[in-house]
Image (cartoon, rainbow, N blue to C red):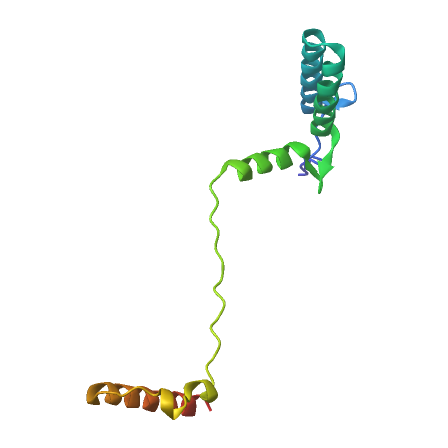
Length: 135
């Protein structure tokens, strides 16, 4: 028993002459808006507004970006423009200190109490152990 497998399911049917239903709606809507602008405004101002509306309606009907309809681009732009944004950046790593930076001249070494001196000696011991582990 053989079954027929539908083909070309991603192609829309041409309903209004050479136009699909969506293309017809975009063109008819753009033409209607242009007609209202032409009748309600002086000619010079109307022409300045009719041209962008006509181009936008034509782009919605026929223009494709990366094989996707132009309406998807417009929808993505509007979603991006009006949603809240979260900015994340990566902190730059701190420079590793060398021994030259750690050694200070004798005249600038402050006087240390006994407990503070023990803390510094312990941290230096830990620093030496971690360096040996890395090698």
